[in-house]
Amino acid sequence: MKKKTHNRNLKALIITLIILTVLSVFSQAENSLVSSGVNTLTKGLFRVSARAAASADSATREELLRENEELKRENASLRAQLSEYIDTKAENERLWSYYGLKKENPSYQVVPGNVIRRDVNDDFYAFTLDVGTALGVRVGAPVITENGLVGWVSQADAAACKVKTILSPDTKASVTDKQSGDSGVLSGSVSLCENHLTAMTKLAESHQVKEGDMIVTAGTGGVYPAGLLVGQVQSIEFNKYDASRYAVIKPYEDVSSITAAAVITDFDSKGKVVKSDAK
Amino acid sequence: MRSKRVFFRRLAFALEVILLWVLQSTPKLLPELYGAKPFLLLSAALAMSACEEVIPSMIWGAVCGALSDISSSGTVGFFSIAFALVCFAQASLLDTYLNRNILTSGVLSLGSVAAVIGLYFVFFRLFAGVPDCGTLFVRRYLLRMAYTFICYIPLYFLNRFLRKTFS
Image 1 (cartoon, rainbow over the protein chains, first blue to last red):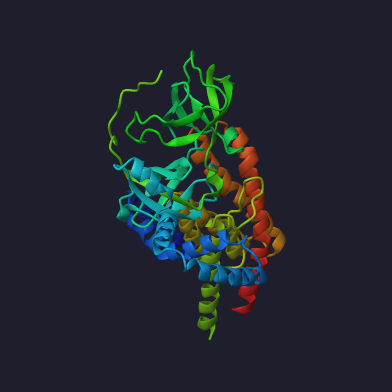
Image 2 (cartoon, each protein chain N blue to C red):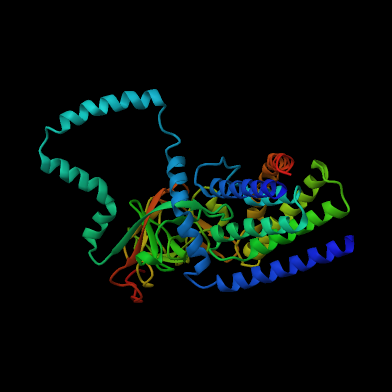
């Protein structure tokens, strides 16, 4: 009897493993049905929980009631203001600084999104946005916040996309020092990620990068538009393994606490390799 | 009557899995231990396999693993297979050779947590050539294993309670 049960269990295990392997093969494609379906069904739930977690630091009920009364009085006085001023203020709050970026760079196609999930298994603060291929998001697209570049889209399905941050060693972006003109490659590392820092590697021997310099994307590879803010040089270090120098960069945005970001789905020099003017 | 109880027990497990998936993935919700967060779905799958028969344990493991895969990589793969295997192994051992109690299931679960998270590290960090793997393992993965196992303990008692209530 025991042997019969054991055999039945083994058969069930083999069948389950075969099903999982087949599912795995079919879910490998970009925009797979499995992840699109699950993300579409659960997007609402994750949005609610992400918003609830973000507002967990908010004030107590009494403080909120008091604030509500004050706001009602203030609102009544604001109604007396010119309607044009109110419309302009509401428009600025809604449009966010991404559209300021778009005004300076009209070729940018920007899709704003909210962070709905963070992968517990990722060591470099990867997150999931609630925008996907249905809105034009593609793998490799740069992801920004109002403070600058924060990552790139590593996976995308119809309803959501996963973003790897600039703290990850998988990130390879050509960057330039605004002050000295030196170019390098932005890439993260495990040791720097602990302190929410990243690195500008492949510095030339004759580089003139110094502390406090501003680092921006070079735009030479056709993957990232030129001029996106990245961070500030914190120090210049020596890599004992390959005898090269690299700059430790403190990103302008704290990628571990982002709650919203935008994906640049298109820009003028996308896909075009441009010769760098940098040193 | 029995099938009704089984249905409610499985419904309770399903709600538990969804709730833990949301808890695990929501930013800033769970406290971090030096940057490490617990792998709640793994804790839940092992807690269920400590209380359930072999085939249901394996299926719950596969479901928890599939949800972890979708959060992590967007594709069903490593976690679904790994969870199904460890849950099957744990449930089989508890069903045939060992007594079902907190001590034996705790030891088995500790080994399972170490195996799954360790294998993930080996395949997706070490073999992938991520630099400074040693630092990563010591500072993040060991803590993640410990945190995941700590979360297993209350889930074991919860699932045992659900099993007793709906059996």
